[in-house]
Length: 329
Image 1 (tube, helix red, strand yellow):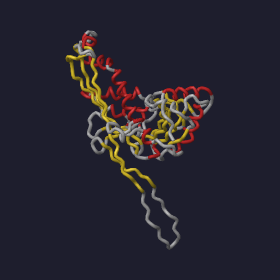
Image 2 (cartoon, helix red, strand yellow):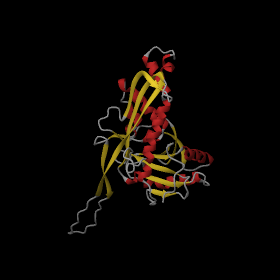
Image 3 (cartoon, helix red, strand yellow):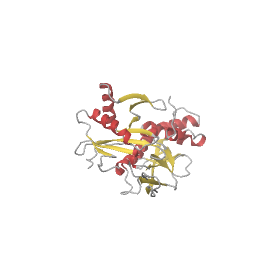
Image 4 (spheres, one colour):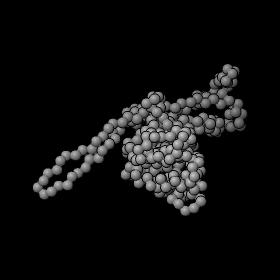
C-alpha cells in the first residue's frame, strides 16, 4: 500500500479514524459516504475558520520582479488578492424502521441490534451521499442560500483555460473535472469546532410512528445530518472539460488526450489530483483502457483500492455528474 501524502491524511476516511466510542456511528457514516462516492476518497476535509463560513484569501495576480542594472534600483511589487467566503450546507433526514424487523431478528445485545438498524437504513445514507455530492457539483448559493457553491456554478463559462469546450452541443452533455485537492487549493469544509467532522447520527429510539396513510406502528427513528461545504482557494485548482457528448465517436480517447494535456495546467504545488466523471464516462474510459495502449493505466490508491489513472490523476466515479447538462458557452 502506498504511503499517504499530507493531502491523503486529511481525507474523510483518515479523519474518521479519530472517531471511536460514542462517535462510532458517525465514523461508520463517513466511511459509507466515501464508499458510495469515490470522489470523497481523495477530497481533504478542513475545519471552517468562521463557524459555518470559511473565509479565504485568493491570489488573483502574482508579484513579479524586474531586471536590475548595476547602480540602479527596482520598483515595488505586490500580489493582488480577493477574499472569498464559502458556506456550509446542512443536509438532514429522519429514517424510520419498523421495530419488528429489529426486535424479531434474534439479536439480544445492543451492538448487533444497532448494526442491523444501520443496515436497514442504508438507503437513507445513500440518499444523503447523493444529496451531498449533488451540492458539491451543482449547488448554487447565489440562487438558494441553503446550498454551497458547487464546481459547475463556479466554472460555468468557456475560457479555454479552466473551462474547456469538448465540442458537444445540445442538452445531453456531461463534464469531466480535473481537481487538485489540497489545503491551499480545493477542499471540503465542515463547521468550526464540530466534534464529528460535520456528520451527526442520533438514534431517537423506539417510538410510535405514522405511515403514509396516517396509521400508526412502533418503529425506531434516527436523525442524520451532514454539514459540508466546498472551498476553492486557487482558480486553477479545477479544470472542467465541458460539453462532452458520451455518444461521440472515440470520445474515450479524446477525453484521455485532453486530460493528459491539461494535468500540468492545474495549480502548481502539492496535492492529490482527481479526475471526476460520472459512471457512463468511467465505463467508456474503462473500455478505452482495455482496447489498446494509451495514457490510461491501472494502479492502486493509497488505501489499496484498484483505480485507473492518467498521469498522476486518479479517475473517480461521481454519480452526481449529470448526462443532461446543457451546452456551456
